[in-house]
Image 1: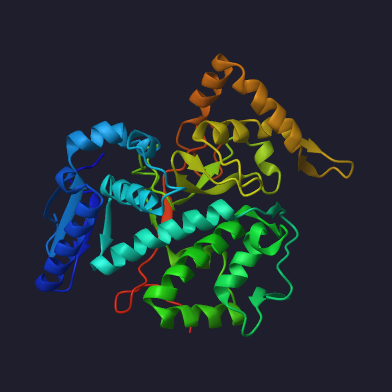
Image 2 (image 1 turned 120 degrees about the vertical axis):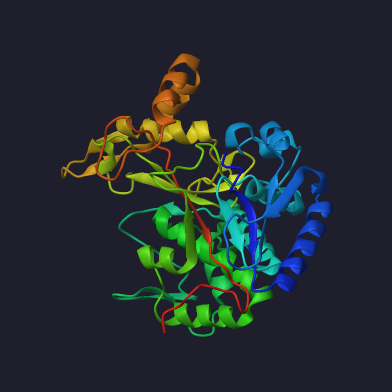
Length: 374
């Protein structure tokens, strides 16, 4: 872990703003019982006033050895499901453990970032969908489909409720057809919108108008709303995740990756060592379970009567359960899968682990950097 440059970095417009952020952040650390475990110092770049905070080396090694945050909640007895404050503490600790710096221009932006991650996790836990790559559905009393534009919200229908109804069966009474990538966009947008309702209503109103006219999707969604950290040249630790991260697991098997929708899997890290399962939300994945599922996609791929590639998910599940009963086979598969992925278009010795993660941009008045189209 790059303790010399990681953690949480405040870079403000003035020294007075930096001191205000410093005081507020130290109060937050004290409230979580972390004041004695955190060190701070000036940032390592010249420019605007800046201060960096990070977890002490001995504490980091005890709580997240080698940058592995998957056991962080268990080691500290956190219950992020029953206690939202525990989820926020896990988020804060994972940020402090960051191998790269998470930069904020104010304490308000840090707090908003923690809240958005919490809202994303909470929404992702409730999300359950009908996986489909060629069909899509939304609640008809909130959404309508527009050719060359996608699903737009009906005028006067609140964005937050529209997103909840589209993704949360406990609220709508049914599951709607989605691809996993589009589903992640809805969950991220919901987490952002919930925070904007409290911290930046003007930007929320602009988002509302945007989704009533022309939703932002795919690569443009990434560019407008998200930051990405970690690269192929400088990958994140393989087991380093912050609750609320969006990430991709790649299918390293060339043949089965040709099945539409099974090139890989877009998920969120929920904290507590768990990743989303949008198709059975009550059964989130561990890292082991996710690796085994993706590995066994190679055994579920087949051609239907029309010659089209399809996936037999029941067969995949049977293979996963058989592997879990065989510790030696589980270890063999994990050795193959727990590697960084190959570059795009390459299927060689890489595994399913991506080198980067994604999270929302700044959202507070005066510092927000989500630039919506005019």
